[in-house]
Image 1 (cartoon, rainbow, N blue to C red):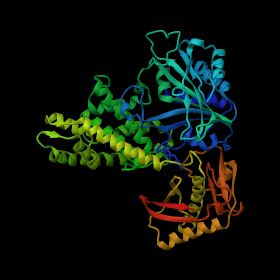
Image 2 (tube, rainbow, N blue to C red):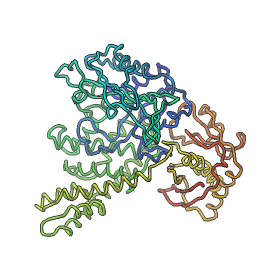
Image 3 (cartoon, one colour):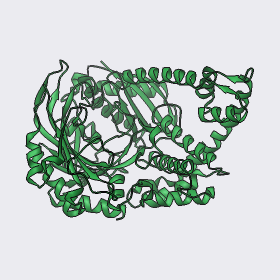
Length: 590
């Protein structure tokens, strides 16, 4: 089975069951500072899981682009990836666990033809906060799954959320596939046996967790199904290695050609090829995303830089000479351009940025080699010195270790790990402060700032011109940040004009209204939108002011305040360059 066939089978099945297909959201979420990347299909849907009506109704399906880097060190085995595609379907207050289980079972057994003897499930065993999920277990049993193949597991195994300290959460029921062709699956399901591979998960969002640790039932109960495309595809082709599917193999073949080595010839070669294939694929999707960023030393740009440089080091390990990342990237672009047209649109940017980063990294390595020679004293290098080489000069620890071994220099690896862990802890502490709030928890402060962002964009277009479009935004509980298209630094007079204009709309206490309408109608009404994004047939449009002659009208998921007067006052704090042709404003509301 090819990847595109699996995508089409999945989407078609759920469309037939009354679900509306929605586009994949961006890998770099708008207005959600709780995450750097979209890590699950539910991220773009948070407001609708919280009860806001979705323009396409209450049954949805899509395949979502995702990035996860928390376990980046595990990439190199047969199943771990930083970029992956998540097959997802949702019920927003419509059907619940029994129908969700029936849909999943039918798709797996009738469409994908998974035999019952390879099928097992787990459900929530219950605790002091929520009861044992007997309902899901009974439904599985009614479909032909034996009791021995239904495992009741604790919260750490079969519970999702909340995303933060509070919010929607609930038990889940997971589906497993027996992956070992050499043996018959045992009658009793043992979730610790790695030969049972998870291929799907229905999350039953039915509770809300409160600050006082209480759990109460949600008025709107949702279902969120997620299934990894890469893993499912490998199993459908009886492969125990995701990199042998058509999602990766063209890229692996290009790496073989460039390196003169063969995939599978040794553990080190195979691991290096997998890391290059995975990391360059992820880099292509981040660079080519509709909200794509370029390599930098902060936030998403830092993750992107790390992925590219890890791939380059692995290329060095395979003795690939010359610039090679664009050649690898071309195989990814060719493989995915029909599924994700934004990649083809941004192809030149993707290839140029990869080449630029690779050239820059080789320069970094050269400088780092010189610094390495300086810090070596009496045939040894301390962990602290190795960490300074890494943090100050960008010189990877892998290179320090390799040089130390070549030159028979003593290196205190444990000391380096301690320094690195201290650095990670500081980063986590900073991130916890930076990423608190956001639309993921829809706090009062972030809702105000989200509304102010609409006012700001409309004011910028009036002051600077119609060439101004939103290029990205980020909202915390403390401030808003808007990136917009404009080449020149704003003058003090222009900044004052914009600030005064926004405050004037706040003073007028304009009504903020929303309406679900067709995309065609939204365009006729001149609603602002990022039209290189894929929208569904229907969209949510927010209007600020008189409907016939509004101050602002934008396609947006929300939420917003009901009247601008609650913002009290707006203060523009900083205006600066973000990237070529893009300016950035940071601002506050009272």
